[in-house]
Every structure is written in C-alpha cells, then in structure tokens.
Length: 315
Image 1 (spheres, rainbow, N blue to C red):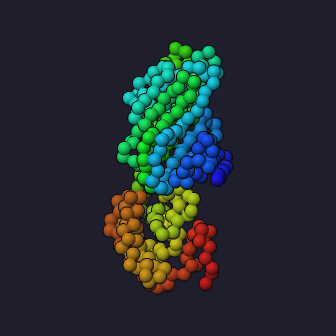
Image 2 (tube, one colour):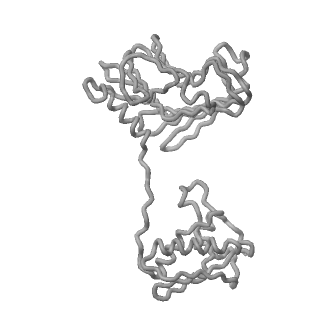
Image 3 (cartoon, one colour):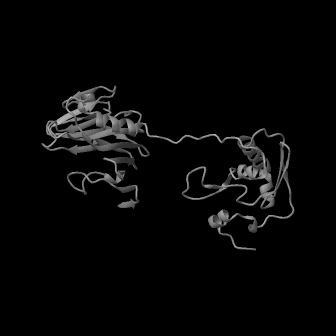
C-alpha cells in the first residue's frame, strides 16, 4: 500500500507491505516481516531523505537482507567514501560490521556526483548493532546488508535513514574534491535549531500582568497541529482569571475553576501563575493566588481564540 502527502515545502511518499522475494511473491515467508519505506522530497534541496523500517512479525531467519542498494552506470565511474572514523578514500571497498558515513559515485570530467549519506541506523537485535556488510561491487552496485545469515525474533526491527544527494565534484578541491558532499553531510547531521529565548522582564502594570498570564498553559487543552508552546490555551483564554489586583510590587490573582473537580489542581494553577509573573515581570514582590467561587465559570468566559478552538454551545 502507499500514501502521498503534498505541501509547498515537502512531498512525502510512503509505501508499506510484506516484501516480495526476487524469485516471486509465492516463495519464502514474507508474511513474517513488514517493510515500510518513506521518501521525503524537500523544495529547493538536492537530496531525498529515505527512511526504511523492517519489522519482524514472527520469528524468522534471514539469509540475506539488503537495503540502501543502487546501481550506477558508466556516467559516474569513480567511487569515494568516508569511513567510520571520518577518513575519506577513493575506489571500491567493503566493510564488515562497520558502517561508512557516506559513499558516492562521481564523474571527474563532468563534476557530477550521486551519494548516499548515512544518517541513522538501528537494529534492535543486540547481535547486529552495525550492518553485517556494506560495500561496492565490481559492477558498480552499492549495497548494505543490515542482517545476513541470522535469526530475528518477533518484535525486533531494522531502521535506516539516509540522504540521497546530487552533488558537485571539483578537481583539486577540499576533501578530495568532494567538499559539496561533505557540506551536505554536516548540515544534515547538525541542523539549525531554534533555541528558547528568555523573556525580558517588564515593569509591573495590569497590561503586562495579563500578558504574563497569557503565557500560562492549560495542559489538557491544546490546538492540534500547532508547534509545542504555541498550541496550548492559556488561563486567560479559558477564562479562569477573575480579577487582578496590584499593590506596588505585590500581585494578587483571583481565579475560578470551571467545575468543582478541577479545584484539586488549584496548586498547579497557582504555581504556573507565579512562575510566569516572576519570569516576565521586573522586581515582583509577593504573589498571591486566590480561589473564588462566585461568579461561577461559564463558557461565555472563553476568549475568542478559545471559542474558535473549542466551539462550545452558548448557555
């Protein structure tokens, strides 16, 4: 079976099912394993991310299990590789129970290259922490054997993640002319991440107090599909903030619970309020959070944002 997910940034194709042996679908015991492969194509990028998972449904013995296999013709006659320790070499070779970091076929004259960057590998069978064998053949084939002549038990799996990259070769350049491929490897293994920035404390006034309270999160209600930290509704959104009183540097917040059973979580709400007030406001003195029961909470207290998310009926 298969499915396709399309968007402006990525197209993802996933296929899954019982594998078919090379001599036909009626041979062997393919029902004992489930294979899934996903290809992710990113807009403007010269690579495809391939993820594969082979799940063992019943105890089975493998003679050969091959993956990450491709055949390159005469247009890319040269071969290069980066070994497990980061060394770069030229020409065909193989590895036993080791995994090269990348391999490539390239053409010195045209400067074209096609490589496989190995990003992740996991075999839950403790006897095979690394592929059984990987290497080039004299015919131009590159192949990895995650498992060879081995038994695997139900519940075990083999997972691989690789990037297939179109890259440039530059005669006389860095890294044996393969700096473009090495650059892609470094970026894929060390992607840019967005760190959290601590808020700059602001002076104490009603507007800033309310902004701090909007940074709280009601953990049982969240907006599906939004990034973590932006997907949850605040205490202000759900309408439990009854009143805010400011006296100098001291702050009192009165809250009302939506129903009686939620009062058992009052201390959690109070701690969250104090945490955000002290993190986001300057020179906060005493913080008091009081539980009030009148006027009672109703859905009318929800913010417009919460109404769009929850869509309750009016009372």
